[in-house]
Length: 461
Image 1 (spheres, one colour):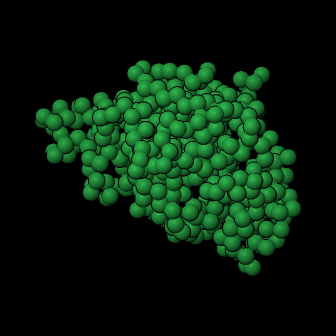
Image 2 (cartoon, rainbow, N blue to C red):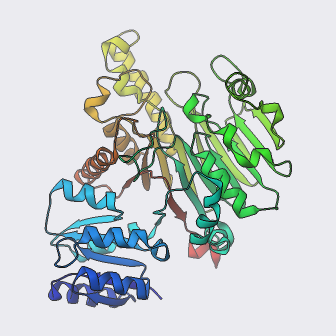
Image 3 (cartoon, rainbow, N blue to C red):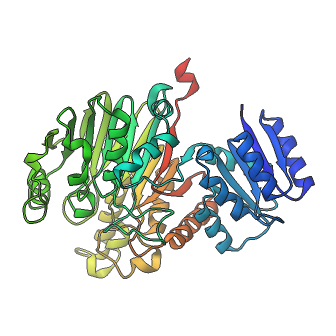
């Protein structure tokens, strides 16, 4: 049963929304203040909570925090509504755990679209823990049966973020919402476990996999985009690699100076690490790829070069429920080559080359269901980091819109960006999308965020 909880101190507003949602098949519960709303949420466990921000007794921020602290409500989506248009309120709402933020007056169309956006993502409020003792707590909040169902038993596939930061891990009170671990994304697609990069986030993923599979052998594939340290530094701490029952296939392309196996081995040599790669008891097979199209089980994967120092690849996973494009490090050519200091030959030729290269990536990600892409800098910051190999937010949004991408996830967050700054970048990206009247959905990648790629009902029939 689909349940919506409306929390608002304006009865007229609640009644209008209730009538509209009931006609769409939702069961409605109503509360006139935050305290009553929290009690009803705990009792009925609704899929959606539509909550006003400014209320007596308990405001929307407090309601959101209370829901996010309750493990039984971890799958509840929260949509904040408010008459306030201050950007700081929007930022703080997201930091508290809200999934959507709507400024009143809210049209029915806006509400329906917000509910659709919220119900396509499952937010895990609890960041993956970093110690073995936490495994039971994690499993308690996400039982094995439920986890299996979310990853293919019902025909759906899943993307889960474990590390979203670029350059260096940044733990601390200012990064708890989006997370401080470096690049690692898990994809469950058509019976395959595919991991994108092995930044520090892969450690928590390894603990989760060990808890989930227990004594059952794990077969998985790790795709390495490139061997900069923030994309491989977590592999020595990946627990499944120490179990001889497991089979781990590591795929990537030759680095700019050394081969893939050599680089992965070097970071584990003495005096940097006490255990060498060849001492890891798991069945680890490292393969350097040369073709740009290959298969992981029955899943087709394509690859493309990105514009980043050294050899860096982007991947596109073609699942039965939509494709996932992953471009973790990329600097748009047109922006870079438009500057005299980085143009080769005359400016006209440089511009033509840049447009061609950017179009190649646009074609690579065209019509993707999900695009995960390097969005490290805002426009002002990019001017100080030209040639560093990372993306500018404005360019990323433009690329996604030109490619007709469905959902854009800003990724590779700058280590100097706290949660508030990332939220501001999301707000600006959404403003750009709104100005272009584009249907693109924009979010910032966040540790614990799960994206379910649902099977088309027509395919099931």
